[in-house]
Image (cartoon, rainbow, N blue to C red):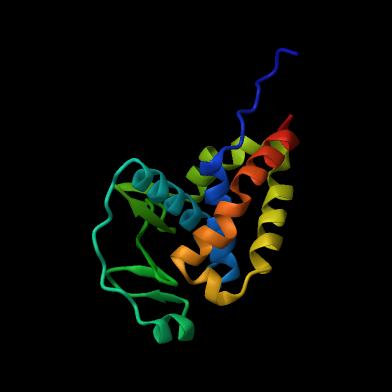
Amino acid sequence: MWGTRIMAVGRFQVMAVLQAARALVLGVPEPLARSWGLNRAIFYAAAKRGFVAKEQPPRRVCDIKAKPVEETPEAFHLGNEMALKTKDPEGTECFTIGGKLQTVQEFARQIETRFGDSFAQAWEEALELVRQFEQKILISQHGFFSKVYKPNRDLLAAKWTAATE
């Protein structure tokens, strides 16, 4: 076969999809949730390589529980995580990191294309997985990473890669 081979689904793509599903489950509209997913995948990849995030004043637990998603002019908070939000040239809200926009189109290019025709199935599986966890896990950066992402990342990467072949 001489067609284009779809690349493997890796941990970066798994993080992006699970983070996007997390944001959607917590009430973020789907296009912005996908931007969040790509933003967080980039953030974690940079952190893994030694990038140190600028320290932000922590939100109080009672504030997070009362309002898991909070937006101020300076920052967008999902649970106890913060990201910068802006608008793309068309005026659509999206997240930004390192001066680069994480648009829905970038999510499609960097994430969805790795799945080929199986992205919709992976997306539904991610939503189903994330919905199994209590809100207190989903609003916690550490809780999400250690209870949702880490135990499932390699299994999902292998499963989702196999579905593309």
